[in-house]
Length: 52
Image (cartoon, rainbow, N blue to C red; front, top):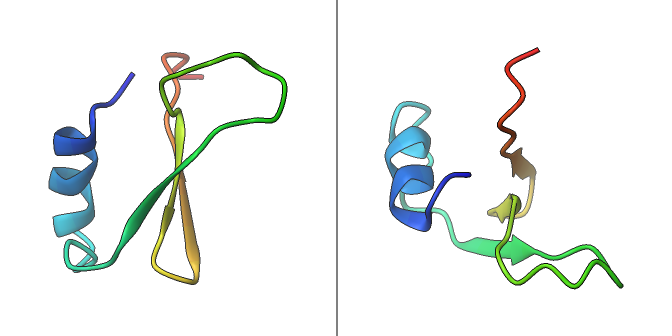
């Protein structure tokens, strides 16, 4: 799973490093760590350990 710092590093490659990032937590999942992030108003970054 990507940390916030790693997420920011990836976003820099697309010129999105200055966009606000908000964690997405699925309702009822009980997960405390985000696996998806809103990036600005137009993008969502989803992180997965499954490379397929």
